[in-house]
Length: 187
Image 1 (cartoon, one colour):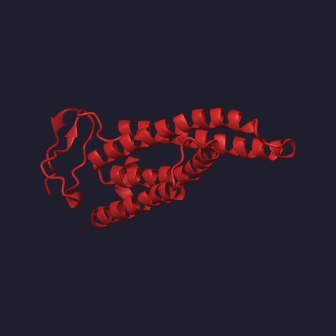
Image 2 (cartoon, rainbow, N blue to C red):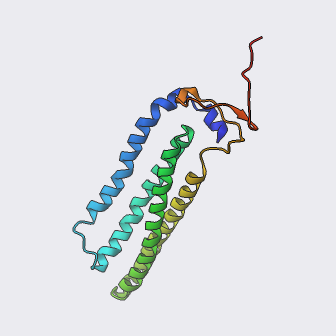
Image 3 (cartoon, rainbow, N blue to C red):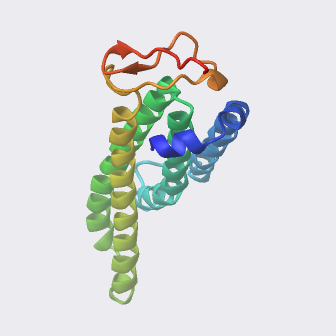
């Protein structure tokens, strides 16, 4: 990742990160609002409504995890640790919601299956398995993203830290093994 960070034009990154964060933030909210509005009117007591809600959640979660990945990438390249931490928390919450939805969807599937006619059971089983797999894989990806985002970021103090003036990081010193590196004198 360091090689990639060194190759990225830091001036371009400095100018592109705020619009990137805003664009990806809006793009992250679109599946959430689509999901919330598609479920109106809310009827949590109705098993058919819950069954459809979990299927819609599986469809909405994919873009959300992908967008979070891009935000974490931009934050890591521009060394925005607090954005990385926020994305880690959001990914963890999303992962927990998806894990809970896998369990609840499986329970609703077992309950809803009793009411299905025999000729539609096979199609329902296949569709439900697809939804369970989609929810489970996206929960796993969100959990992995959360862990990676939480553990990435600042290297230990004893490692080499690059001065990155183009990103506006003032006051950082280049340290190798805990000893200040003297600037090279022109000859």
